[in-house]
Length: 176
Length: 138
Image (cartoon, rainbow over all chains, first blue to last red; front, side, top):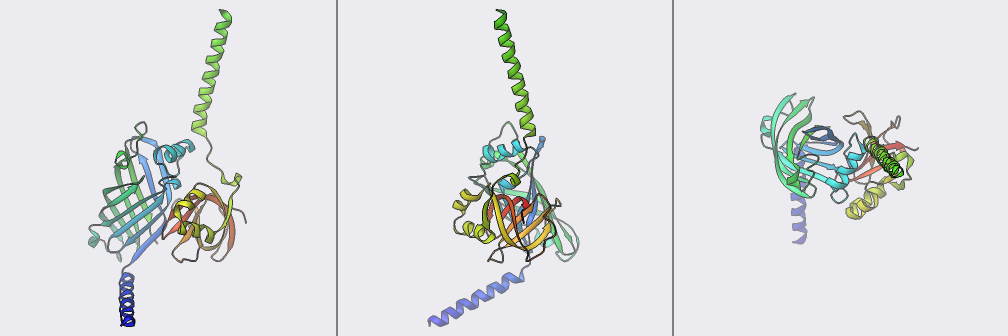
């Protein structure tokens, strides 16, 4: 009886692994995300160590480390980490979401496909729903994800009234 | 009276110069140079193990610190800015120590064992421990 149930579980487990493998996953450990103030060109930070996964069913995740953001000015980078984003207390930002119109993307055909993305963004320990329009560009079967969308930093408990209220998040991730 | 004026002028002058120096320093403060720092010596596996077992304690030990890491190269690539990126293997095939180099570490291939210094920016579960500003030691 016991052995029979173990066999059943194993079979189910194996079957579900089979199903996961039937889906195609694209990943990168070094995608790019830029935080930019729309009102001040100098307030710009680049992160080139974004881990992201894109499944051909539309599931999309991004994770990055706040301490990986580089500013041109070292002093600005210090303020960003210590005063505004408290990156020692909240080292990571995560997004999990979906491409809602994934059916319109043909992963096997080169081209540029407009997409709508919705999901949850966790930044500075606060999770908020976000929505963005973006583009998936397929080149030789490899996708590139691009998007540009604003967030109100107050929504994430970040107060920097002297610096900026809005931050534009620019995503540019080439998958393998 | 005259002496008093001189002292005041001198004080204002010093204040002005100090202010200008401060502004200059804020705009030109150099970025951190990890090559000049002492690194915490670790193997790639040790670094991953400490993040996997207790992320919070590993964060307090290694986050923002100079790390001198020794590991086996899994793959070498270039990021979207043209910098060299080296992944070091751990005992989990899905998890890498991901290092972006500030200076070109030269020709490396999978299987090479190297030691380098860099700054640890943290851990992304099921993906990698991230180190940037890497400089090759040997």
